[in-house]
Length: 307
Image (cartoon, rainbow, N blue to C red; front, side, top):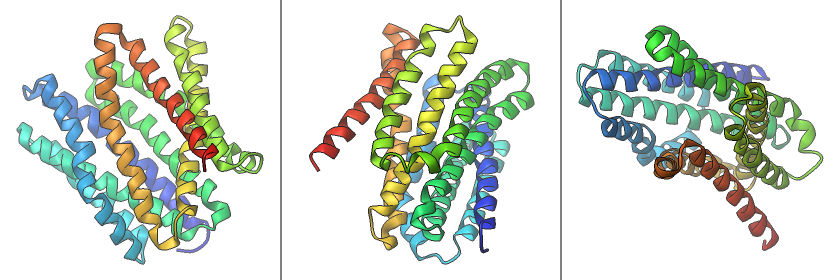
């Protein structure tokens, strides 16, 4: 597939893949509770989704480097995602739910690796920011739509929480979309490293405010949108920096290492946030995340100065 069509196909597939994952994962929690699982079991199943596929991450990335048709690999990943969803639907016990969750995690990891590798391989260096930006935006849109659809399918008991999560994600998606539109212009003004620093600090400041203004929903939504803008700005830029910082034949593996760090953070940060939220309240968990973002920005600045 030649020309910009391949990127459009990949973006559309990204919306569907991420939407399906974010529909299935919350619904899986409800199914586990219906099967008699406790909170600890639900947490362990979440960890299985995030961590178990990482065992194969670098091997899959090396395979992606050798694969000629990466979009076909992404297509195969959607089959794996569908298999995981079918296992979850058919599961009549916790062990089958664990198996389905593991397959779902592998499928999502494979799709993400194939998509990132395709952009790194088929895009010119000057087009990497835009390509990774569209791919990130497709995931953001899928993340907004998935819980909303899942809440509608499950019913009112779960729909209220799903609707709230979807509205939060939608605000973040708006910010991400604005960042996507601005990305080609902004990267010509400052260096990519500088914009990553701006995105980290800006997101930390913007997302620290909503817990203080929960009684003003419009202001809280605006803060979320601004935080989403900065988060949406930083993610594709880090992928571009990694892609341009290593030889072409290593790009898939380098992006896989980034993804490993991302998945580890998805498990470790919520656990740490839970420890903080228990004695101090949920706002403390949000502020902890903001502190981690700000600390990452400080580390990036120090590393850049000593380079």
